[in-house]
Image (cartoon, rainbow, N blue to C red; front, side):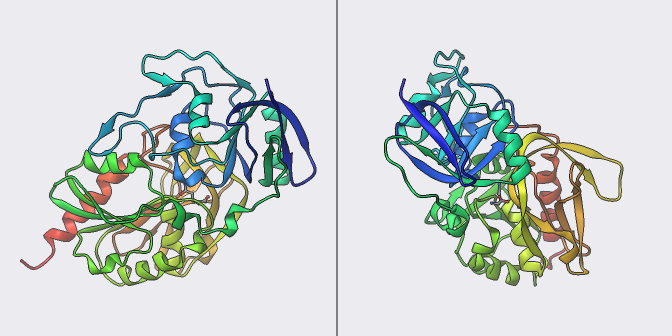
Length: 360
Ligand SMILES: NC(=O)CC[C@H](N)C(=O)O
């Protein structure tokens, strides 16, 4: 076994053993307390630039599934590549066993030249990240490298797919602004009778004659997406329904005139409780974000839609009169609970209502 170390910007150095690629990588160190779902997490483009610490102690035991396709997108993965910068686990299970496993986690990381480190006390590390906040860090193999803050980069421009892509042929025409979309969002739409037009983050979608607009999740600081925000401001002048998820929620707020800020250590797990504003209904949600909307900065026409029951932060917003809403959590899950998937139906109901109200 080859030795590697995890180095944090506060000077912490943790020795561990290498799995995956034996190479060095720098990024922002974040933790997820999800107990399963590493194939989904590692391919979620929102993790671009991040070194992911998994608190669940044993990782890799169910291997990595094969690459089955559904309508030209992966059936299982959240994109067509690994996006994390590095992986930190406590115990790496060399031997995997699962009915649909095609390879080991270590071999999969190697394919994408991503380093992993195991033998790390990930719970101690998580306590440190909770006290001090998410930190820059690096996994160092033979070659030392400088720290790198991915939030200074336009990560969305790096992960958004170039070109316009069409999926499905259903009755509602939805534009999906791809800031690093998870494929389960596409799957959720395709199960609901839509024609989906996927456009890059900086595409002028206001030129398309769509029935509804969807803003995807994506990596990094939402303020980097100035072009998307500018196009969105035009869309907000109209009455066509708009729905956003995660980064999409942050972009909606920024376009509306609100502000976002960086959370101390973010929300990354499958069991984040949120409250539907004005009710006593709570939902358990899947989350992966490091930034949040500052509710106090929302203009008068907007209101908080969901609130995080752990720390009171904004988990969604809605326009008071127009059919515009977004969530900070992931209604599409993958992994995590599917309790809020009904929001796709609410969006499409709003789309149908909008269409029915148009002069023939
Ligand atoms: N999953 C996402 O869309 C994340 C949004 C944003 N990059 C954040 O970390 O807050």
